[in-house]
Image (cartoon, rainbow, N blue to C red):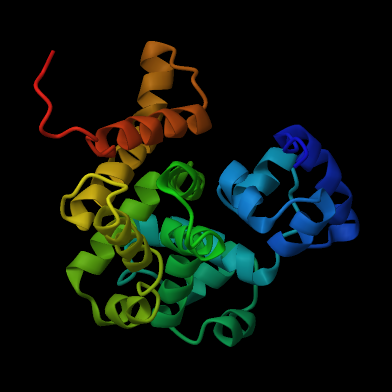
Length: 260
C-alpha cells in the first residue's frame, strides 16, 4: 500500500474541479484526489471544511443567500418574530422566490437545521465509515462538528432555544430533520461500548462529553483570542479535545490489576 496523500496534495488535486463555478460532490473530489470519500471526511471533517481550506467561495445561489440571512435573523430575533418579507429584502431576493423555495417558516427552519446543524455532517461521516474504529471515526466526527459550528456557535444555540420554546413552526420544521446525526452517533458509540472498544457509560453522556467541549471552545474562542492572545487553530483544538476524549474513553485492559 502506498503512502497516504497529504492534505496539501489532496487540496492541489481537487482545486481544478471548482473552475467555472462548478460544485463537485465529495465522491467527485475523492476520485480527483485518488483517495476514498472516507479519507476526505477523516482528514477534513466535511465538504464545507474542505472548501474553506481551498479558499473557494462559489457565487451563492438564492437558496444559500436566504439561508445565510435567515440564520442571522432567526439567531437574533427568533423564528416567531421573523418577517418573511424582511427576510426576502435582506437576502436580496424577491418574495416570490423566497416562497417558491421555502413555502413557510417551518420549511425555512427545517432547511436551516439541515444546512447548519453539525449533525447532518456527522451522519455523513458515519455513513462513510460505518465499521470504522473509534480512533478513526471519532476524530472525523469531531472535525465535522467543529467545522459546522465555526463562527456560528452562538447563532446555532439560539436555534436550540427556539426548539426548546416549542413554537409550532419550529416543532414542525425540526420533526423530520433531527432523525440523522445524533441518533446515528449515539448508536455507533453504544455499539463500540458493547464491542469492548470504548469505556461503558450511557452513550448520550459519551456524546455530550465529546460535543460539549467543542461547542464551549467555539463560544469562548473570540474572548480567548482578544484577552489571552490565543492563536491555536480551531482544527488543532478540536483534535486535542478528541484525543483527550479517546484517552478518557479507552478501555482498561487490566481492570483487576493491582496499582504499582
